[in-house]
Length: 353
Image 1 (cartoon, rainbow, N blue to C red):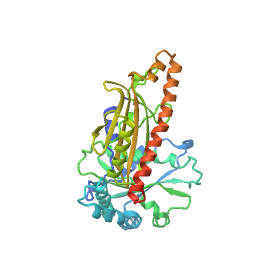
Image 2 (cartoon, helix red, strand yellow):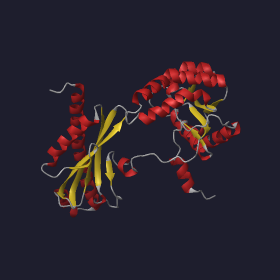
Image 3 (spheres, rainbow, N blue to C red):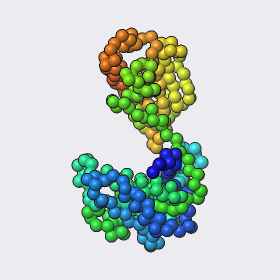
Image 4 (cartoon, one colour):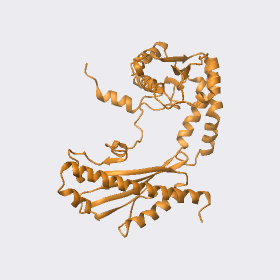
């Protein structure tokens, strides 16, 4: 049977966490839930053992109990955060408004599904429990999306595990994984979310080694090999930006520094701008409670000592030389973001001399 790749990709890419667009008034047929669980159970399992168990909650009293546990675990905090952020333009304003809405209306959702798995993790950090259930729950969410229903993956209630077990009569040797509200959606026009492109977050052969193109076989400087260092800075974005710009101006050593996105991205090149040997830049990304600071380097085919070193080398030596150069530069990038983090967090705390 031919698979419609476009439809599969669309279902995977638009299965959103739906909260405010759940239709709380439209019933959800139990057989539909079972059909989606049948699909979900086709997901891979460790040892091919079927150890997942699904608790489907429809009883209004039990749903009310789950909603109370959710409020106790995190819901009240979500509501307070929503109220505090309302009208501020904060990056988390919309997220908290959506989360608070679910906390206030969870008991009204037609169906709540608690996926579980037989067994209790031993705390050894070894796989063998969660790796046999999470992919199945995601398949369940996608199957529902394909049929016009919405879900939201929540885990806050797991903080109330003992009370949750008492409410649902869960045995001690069973592990709940999530709480999934399920309802028909108000409209089905969900869009893809902003995400980093694959080339920015995918590394080849070594961690943090990127390629703008290809890479070819063998890879060359024309493929745009690069590296990246990133970490989170707990300081206001304006403070981080101040230190990033100062570092960039020092590191550019007289080369023009370009503020491509003021407050978010700044960079410079070495060598000829039209055919650079290296392109350097910083990116600032606001996240919950911090700023994700990213420092990137992409090598080019412009004139440089590295370009001369690899020009006449055999393919294996050329690849090894590029990799070694990137490893050294990655250490420098990491040191730079570490120094910026220390300075910015000291400024934010008022401890910088």
